[in-house]
Length: 215
Image (cartoon, rainbow, N blue to C red; front, side):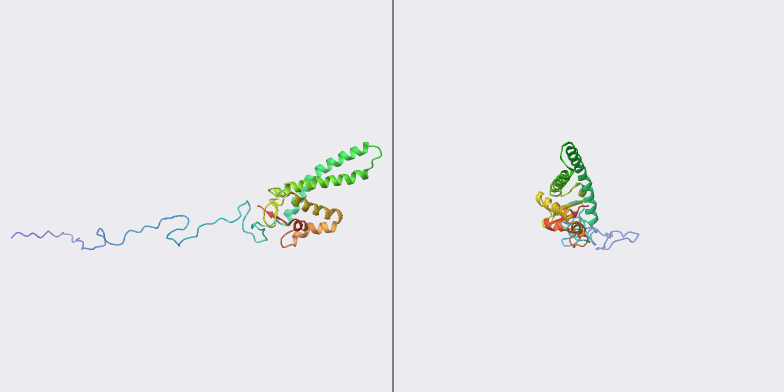
């Protein structure tokens, strides 16, 4: 009789049915979940989606000091002091020009004394100062030349926006008049941001304004 049993391999490598290495058996190969930014992995896992901070102007960031209504840090006293010195130096140029022209005109007019030109020069200087700060502090940027150099700006204490021309004029008038008529109150007003918790001077409080740091 002829034997129909298939021959057994000589090396003994017959694989039993259900072996993990056989096709279709064993765990599937591992593949990492797709990375879909933001929120890696399955829903509910991974880092939360990124949300930008509410204020996006240059210089915004975390600060340990007081901030305005939009979260911007308030300017330090030394920044305000340096800015006003720069602005006063700039304003001294037109004041000197006006004073020189008036004195020359007065010296050429018979019977005109210097006592007349002195108050006139002061009034013109005051008008130039109020126009300068009213236009720049009250503008969209809230920055005079000095403030721009120091990276600070005058803003509304409630809304964080511009304070407008007339409030800027009022703000500067109070500053100037306190120095012109009463030097000691003027000096205290200029120094008051050092101890005020909102870093406001008296003229800031009168105009409901803040001076914020932008960088």
